[in-house]
Figure 1 (tube, helix red, strand yellow):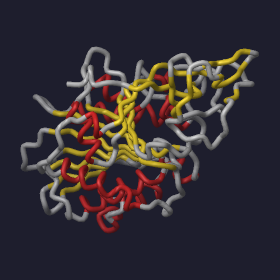
Figure 2: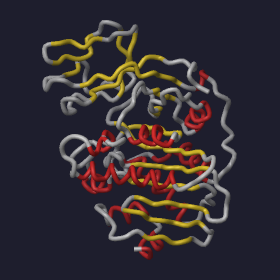
Figure 3: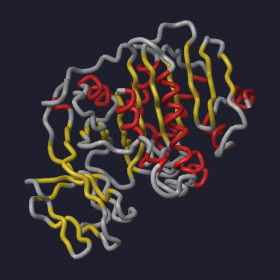
Figure 4: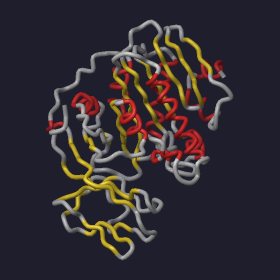
Length: 345
């Protein structure tokens, strides 16, 4: 297997050739003194051996198997590392979240993987389905990666996605709930330099992958949406040049040259509530092609279920991730209001 990967330098192809598991982990060292460790299918770590690195960076993709642009973006970054075209100075772990779902061409096999972190994989029915098993393993790999280093370090986790529907802001990021911790203006401006100028501040703990890293390891973690879902090979990768360039600068310890924080350069939203599904007859009142960040006025009937109407409560609320087809008990939509910079440091 070592020879298979070292020859192809294509970790995605290697992962899809072994979508369920690897018989054993392995490692090798590149000529430029970067140690490469493959811990499992879709799990690869790059670590420079002779440098004083200070950052531990996790880049995850394919938590949903049909969200292909982040997969292609990460594979290009990995190829450049394996080909020694990129002179790495920081520790980096790439996670291809759900290889079986990529192989299947679907969002997931049995269950939404991004609702199973922070221990959710071990609660409720279906404990042995593929996503629950994978979520538990991914948590262990993140723990091993972040927990193996001592001293003052910056931990970063960018979980890369694409959205099901179109959006008034093509690229945006969800900043997980941080309790009493302030939001980072440096991280917000890093994302802005990546071409992501819209940030959603979440209002409560969740079971997403980015929240897991943020809560348990105080990582600078985000769920990042890079546009709309397209089949593999049909993404316009020129739309992600800024993202790829900034991630490369981050991994190679170069000066990021970030702009000063400026509210005029970013769109900030606060999640004001999450609307969950309580009845099978739940339905939205708007069309299926309405874009993310569409705003509705106070009093507007947003959805109906069980003989009740769900109305807009603030002067204006915008929607993101509406999906009426989720199981009863799960979130159907996040509702947003405009945020300010009062909790940003």
